[in-house]
Length: 423
Image (cartoon, rainbow, N blue to C red; front, side, top):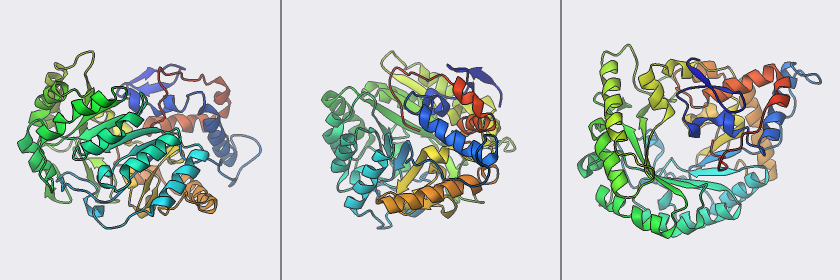
């Protein structure tokens, strides 16, 4: 996995890894190190690399450190590039009090952060504000990913958020014409109206970060044979718009599609495609133009899976260890069920429980057992061989600890300026 650099504490990592995706570092935060140690020793005992085991033993009794919370399947857009289109507006929903029971139990079992995202538009959930207030009452870090149509509801919860929380609006355009073509809002809303609401939110509470998300699409991109509107020419324009309207940052990431083989989320570019080199070089140049808008108060970010595309190292992130360890530390809770990874939401081979997987102690025990089963049987070398996995580095690092558990004693705690439990 070259190229590499050395992170604080002596942990090697690929140079493309952005800080928000350095999950090995996050697991070395002082209060998470004991949990990491319990997991590594469990796996080491089962493999026989640590005395006192060999064979199946009980998995440590923890909820995930971090979850994606798909709070609803309802959405008021019909985005052409949505990887979850087939599960939207199905009418499947939580029983609200059971959802709160699940979150309460997970917090008691070690949940530290919740990303309210995906599967639908969070702000259309009837009890969106109540849910955010409940999450903060549990002393959890909270992030919200929204399409921007519900900025009034974001403003209503803004006072609850602190410097460790964040909000990201998925906008993907510099002009309203491209925004409308890509997102197809079911009720009239413009990109200008959405961006105009950002200063109002920041005025209520400037402590948390508010970002502009831009998924880069290109000519020829498709999902389930649907053609996707191209937007890469608007990269610099979007950066200028984001700075002008008071966003704290803009983040660029490549479009994801679904693999035919197992429906995993993958990047739709390959070196064998004659179109590949031209698209990648064009993206790189436009990102450089966008960086001209950066200031000390406004950042321009390239995500890890974008960096590996134009560094030509993306295949390194598809070479997975057989076992995915990160499914112990982060999961996805959806009205459709509980899943081991965002890549496999709504996929039966990634399911660890129902939507009430943590609603009661008995349900949590069942989910705990199913998580252990998937850790033992889910073969990432096969299931994830096309996935440019953001957890690849952390999985290999944990794998090395399991093979040599004595290294646990030599790990130094990572002490970030601000705690970050988002995985």
